Length: 301
Picture 1 (cartoon, one colour):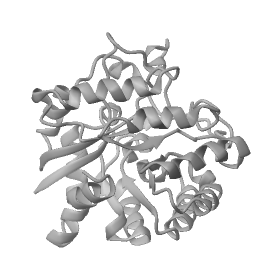
Picture 2 (picture 1 turned 45 degrees about the horizontal axis):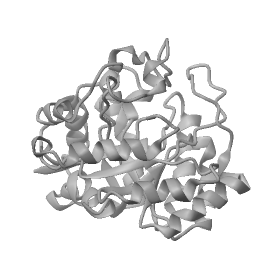
Picture 3 (picture 1 turned 60 degrees about the vertical axis):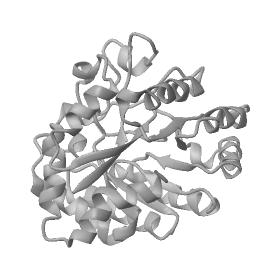
Picture 4 (picture 1 turned 90 degrees about the vertical axis):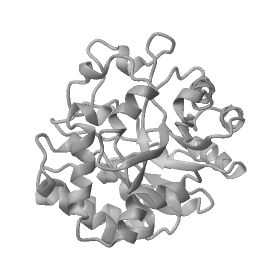
């Protein structure tokens, strides 16, 4: 079966600036990121993709914390890669960075939109970290900030979606925010980033995902689960995968790798084999949607 990976990264640390990878020690959420602080090219990604149980045919690149003073610079760089014959057209879509607090955000969006493969924007919104297991930059709850919301409203001027990355305790706020902007398709990153420590954490995540699932313009990438589950097994991820599909339906879910970041926790083969095992009793049509069709439709590739 063919597959699309709708959440991966590449970087060239010799040519570009990535503050989080260049920090000493590297800025991290769940683990030691030092092992990925080296170049990761499209050829490296394709080599990892060739190890999966399926045929990797398309991909979506998600912004990588590139130089914040020039967000369209990353999109221009990606375009040069996607149009090179050796890349086989990958990445087929770009999700770029924009800061919606920037008074010039419309110009930034226009800069990204100038490239044909641009499909969306991500601004990481994780905030309110009070868990000793985690280390993350405090960003504040931007979703209620009037200036941020004014900037976000510019998305309606472009045919772009928004990749939403938050913690479970932010989901109620996020559900209200996305409900205020139904014209902007939203794609939840990393299965809503559940913290798999207890039943209480599962319930908080489940309740928040249910609120987000009420909005028909919200879909979800089932990815990033190994980040919160050291030494994970298929049985560890199974309840999160299945409950996400139950809440959002088969049409609004897609599997993704978060590579090479998730390479800290799993090989590419192990990630996709895990998804394969969880869905082994699904129909061929259902599996095709999760591994390929939904990503192709939602990201318009």
